[in-house]
Structures are given as structure tokens and as C-alpha cells.
Image 1 (cartoon, helix red, strand yellow):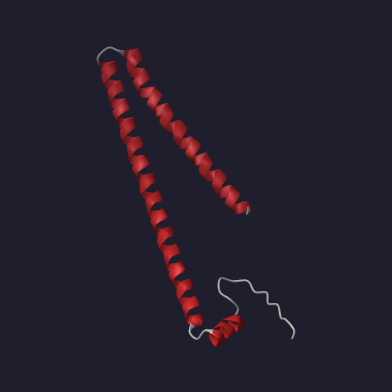
Image 2 (cartoon, helix red, strand yellow):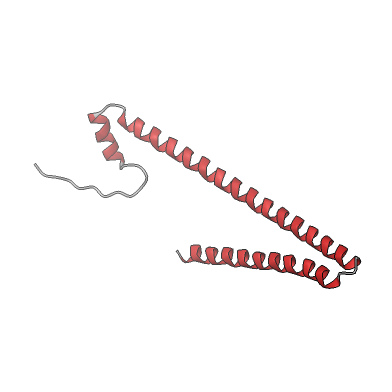
Length: 120
């Protein structure tokens, strides 16, 4: 008796192997396909949830940053109006500088991530 070795790349077994599975256990090829289809659908569902969650997080972060910036600027302008120029200026500049720094950091991180994906 001689042995045969198969080499095949892909998400499913080679058709000849599937045929042999079916000979040994009738209906097993269909079960393998069903499991493959279920796993693929599950993976797509998870990917959609991750994408949706990331989009929501980005929108929420942007809206939060806008509100923080607006409240800080309005508060700083109120302080300037009340004669507290130094405190008002600090109340305007500090949060705005923090928001700008966070934006730049996030942007660089995204650019680095895209570059790493291009290299692979």
C-alpha cells in the first residue's frame, strides 16, 4: 500500500478530500460547508459590529471635544469679560491646546497604522 500526500491552500479542504469524507461519512461534506458558511457569517457580523462601534466612538469623541472646546472658550471669554484676563486666557488656551495635541497624536497614530498595513 502506498500513501499519497496532498497539499492545498484554502479555507475548505480540497474537493477530492471532501469526496472521500463523504464516502466515509455520508453528508459530511455538506456539514463542513455549513460550518464554513456559519463561521463566515459570524465573522462578518463581528466585523460590522466593530466598524459600527468605531464609527460611533469617533463621532462621540469629536462631539465631546467640540463641546469641551466651546465650554472652555465661552468660560474663558466670560472670565475676560469679568476682568480676569489672565485666568480667562488660560481657560481658553489650555483646553484648546490639549484638544489640538490630542488630534495631532491621533492623526499620527492613524497614519502610522496605515503605513504599517501597506508594508505588510
